[in-house]
Length: 119
Image 1 (spheres, rainbow, N blue to C red):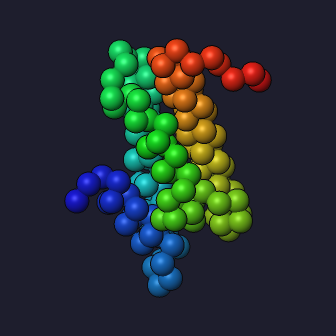
Image 2: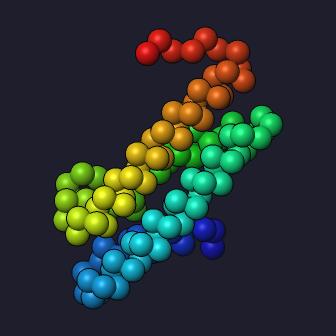
């Protein structure tokens, strides 16, 4: 089983009814730390030489923003149900993910020789 599958299962398990709030929080926190570690690794990847893995980064991050298993820790309405400190940690993670996704898209455009988008 791949890490992404394990992560999706942890997040899905955390949102299921019947678990203790502490157990659900612990699973969400573990998932958040895994995602954060992945963001750090991908940030380092952007600093390296262009590779197929680097070129795939924007698409991989797009998946994070679409995956239904992550909706419970991504969507604004669902985040409002979390304790404020946990909610803030997730909001920061998603801001960082969005920033890295934009940076990855920009790097890919530059590598392809495409003109940069007007801001």
